[in-house]
Image (cartoon, rainbow, N blue to C red; front, side):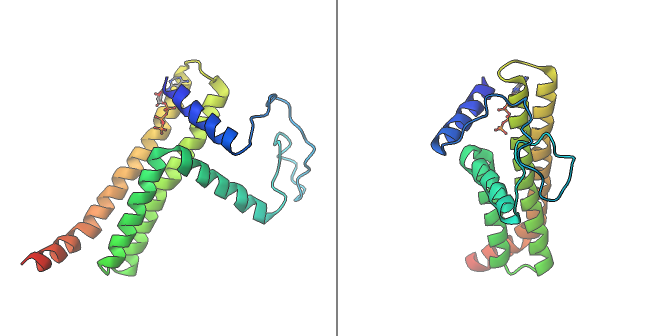
Length: 171
Ligand SMILES: Nc1ncnc2c1ncn2[C@@H]1O[C@H](COP(=O)(O)OP(=O)(O)OP(=O)(O)O)[C@@H](O)[C@H]1O
């Protein structure tokens, strides 16, 4: 049921961006030779020929996650808020770096979670499989653990100076 919802948002995204899923994913199409001469990518449908295109595809992935994944949007907003508060409260550069790292880690985990969900859906389609459940639950667990760690870091570094600032304004 939830998978159907995820698949429908993926389909909407693909349709609105004039993209489609290749009908025969099992057939390798080695008509895009690896420009670096690596021979370990024979199964890849396409290999980005330039560094610029690699960045473009990576950005497309971030955009896809932002558009289709509500949790990714929430984590992005929370990360911006945490770093913004750090700057506003004039935390040290090391403290802001730690907040940025942990906030970024949650977004990275959310991107990997989205990637794993897509590969699982691609593999098992709409059928139930215990291993699909384990893969999705563990990927979601990774996001949860990183979010808790990020929250603890934010509480430890932001809350004390924030409370001091609020007290100084009120009293
Ligand atoms: N094919 C499947 N087989 C078994 N269980 C599945 C399958 N698809 C989904 N599930 C179960 O449903 C849960 C929710 O699936 P979904 O695809 O929405 O992942 P999610 O991690 O909750 O997504 P999101 O991160 O977008 O909230 C999974 O964590 C898993 O327990």
